[in-house]
Each structure stands twice: as structure tokens, then as C-alpha cells.
Image (cartoon, rainbow, N blue to C red; front, side):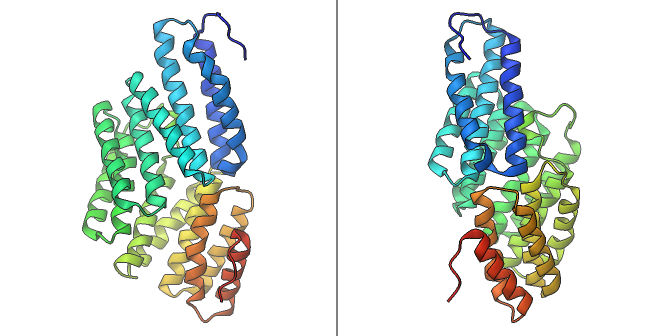
Length: 314
């Protein structure tokens, strides 16, 4: 696009919003590595928009659209394993959302930043960003944003073995989800459905089974099964994550064949997803499978190693 001195109008912002929506759908369906180049190109194309002449009402909407594009870019980079790039894009997103006074979007960026730290085991930083996000969600009155942040904060607590806090935050997040207005949800939060709530709840108990006691795997299994069944075909990566945790939870319970079956389903589903994060999530499953003196479990571990490029265990 060449903007020159042309006045920017609502239709121009609409095209940017629609492009971001399409790229986000591709990310959820096929992984960040499939759309990374397209997202970067879209950002390059959008830079001149900030200095184009436009009415003030269009400018605020543009700031929100550009903040969401950067928010998506951060998530895509995170999924592709480019953590420094992800932080850079998220910082731009926070600045633009602040200019627009878009507290709901600010809350979402904080959630996604928290997830980057959570994935890499930096639990204090993850919890800090989830807390900052809750402040922004409170300012906006966005109950769905509050729910997203509560259940993810619960996940951080589960990873550190804080069972009481994890349960308390998970219950709060479920209550917030039930009370939230889920009509006309912003694109950046539309992923958070009943299926995703079940998936995060299952993740909380799956981690508690490792940090507190294996009995929690029994609670994780039906939650993760519900998530797997509830995700539509646009959420292939999320279904893969839940299948990985479902497989792991079955193995922790000692239900080896069910664990192997879920693991093989996860590998099949992941075949259409290009995501460093998916490969990272598979590796603990391989470790868990190796704990079992069972031919099918050992075969699953070998298949995971081959799919993730992990050298065979010695």
C-alpha cells in the first residue's frame, strides 16, 4: 500500500483488522512458523499509517488495530521460538494500547507476555504479568480478560506446587468466565471458549500431578478430554497441546495404553502444525513415556523424539 498524503479512513483500518484476524486464524490452525513472514510484512506495510493524516476517531481505532497486530506478532514469534522478538513486539503493543487507552487489549498483551515467561519456567515474572493484566482488566471491566488472567495465574501456581493458590485462582477464573459478557468478544480474546477454559484447568491439574501428587492426574484427564472434544478445526494447535497433556496424565495415572493412544493422536494432529512451542511441549511427554517398561510407551517416546528432533536417550 502507498498512502502518501491521502486521508486515512475507517475502511483502511477495517482492512488492517481483517488482515490481523486472518493471520491469527492461521496461527491458531497451523502454528506461528507458517505465518511469521506474513505478519512481519504486514507490520512493515503498516508503519506509514502512524503518520498518515486522519480524523481523531480513526486514529484511536488505528492505534488499537496496530497494537493488536503487534500483539499477534509477539505471539507468533513466541510460537516460533523467537523470544527476544516476541518481547519487542509485545512492548510495541503495550505502548500502542496505552495510547488508545484500550485496557482490555493491554490486559491481553500482559496475559501473552506472562505465557512467554510461563513456558520458559520464569514463574515469578509470569505471575507478575498476569497480575498487571488483572489490573488492566479491572480498569476495563472486562470479565473475560479477568478470567483468562486468573486461570493462567492458577497455572503458574500449579507449576510451583502451590496447590491452594492454584485451586483458588482457578475457581475465581471459572466464576469470572460464567459472569462475563461473551457477546461481541474482541478478536484477541475470542480463543477463550469453554474448551479453552477446560484445557487450562486440565493443564493446572496436570502440573499439580507433577509438583504435588499424581492423584491430580485423575482430575486432569476428564478436563483435557473435554477440551480436546470441544476445540473446533480452527484450533488445531490448542487441541494438540491438550492431547499432549492428556497423554501425559494417563501415563502418570499408570493407564499406559490410553496414554499411548492420546500421544499418537497428538503426534498425528501436530503433523499439520509448525510450532517450536508444540515441539517443546512434546519433550516432557517422551520423558514420561520412558518411565514405563512397556513397548508401546517406548515406541511413543521414540516417535516423539523423531518428531521433535530430540537425540535418542542413551
